[in-house]
Length: 258
Length: 258
Image 1 (cartoon, rainbow over the protein chains, first blue to last red):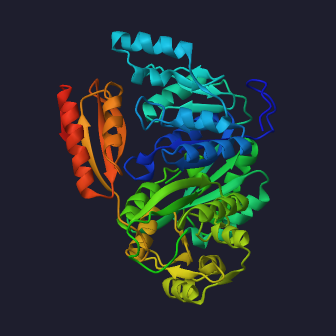
Image 2 (image 1 turned 135 degrees about the vertical axis):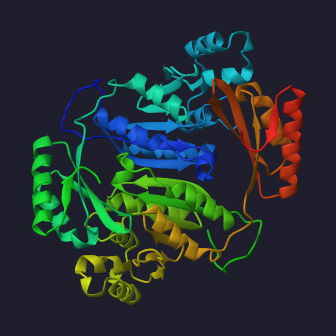
Image 3 (image 1 turned 60 degrees about the horizontal axis):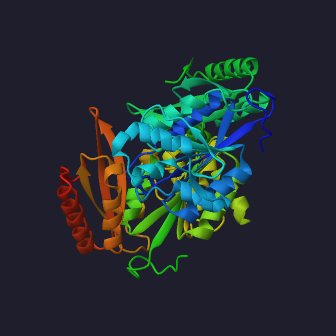
């Protein structure tokens, strides 16, 4: 659980986050989610690890349950989707209900939307000024309608360009630890042929995680081994050890992904 | 919960499924998941709705908790990832532990792998024959190493080409209901300008869901409205009503996405 003191803070503590993706269009296969990967990389720069993601339907009970469970387990929770002006945009209501707070029109959001739409402002458009009571706004540099921050919970738009704009505005504002560094070793080897060697490198290097990602290309099997650690020096030792071990088996290995 | 009687069965019952995506590479943003959208569409053809997805790390407790929770809530659960030969492939062990059953080598899987690898068979490669006790195999037409079926739970590979091959083998084998049909109406209108009208069409047509998916293109705002129902005739009536209502407002609307 987060003990908020602003950015910086204890570099050894691991800060975690969860993402709740909201939308029938993702679960029907109509739309490919693009926010998870972007958020994961953005969080890593803030020194926060994305530990879990859930995709839920446009269903108030499902949204409320997922957000509540993720807030219990992680320092931060982000949601994407369901904050537009139409009847299927129910994220704010679902979260407010789950938290037992009323939904109110945020005066600053009303002002932003009125400025943005001018005399084309309508009740439907003013839906986008509704927030759970006590929330702050997250600026939206793309289209006006803001995101919402409620303590450790960030309620963001679903359209990737808008989501990314909102995250840019949050850059450097969240308390986090050290970012995870990663380096890759690519090899023209089947991962099953070098499984023992990979496990050994991980065992020998405390705090380094070794992932193995096989591929087939032009009828040949290969794998990228991705090493991750918050400790740059230790990561370098593990990369060298892995390259040596692969070369000793006569395997063509290089730094970087292939 | 599923009452298994094989394919067919009660067409009005809604069959649901959940997907658990397993892998640090997804949560780090390194790899973009491609299985959710494919599985969603494949399930729809089987008359089953994907209602929830979770992405969890290569962590036994997280995998076990997600699979257990999803089995409690849905008819079917699918997992992707973590069934290869390396030390970070822990899906089988995590699920067996969560279910309180031992892990055993499935004799048919041992035979398949021995045939596939010939005298290059190793202990690491034989890891891919390990299953929770009581499981059946799901054939893998791509690379030999099979997937696993344990009642309502399907443990599949993470590499999309292999996942898709395994799903093809399961075509028509799962009990389901009627597939959800969908039709789209595209319009050069901002969704916030037609929010009331969309809600009205949904209210007027029982069993039809209307989703609104805005876009910006060439500096112009538009939206695709996707209507979904299991009832083809009712869906057609809703599409016509929506087109009429948009046209009455002077909005250029057409059937199909734009």
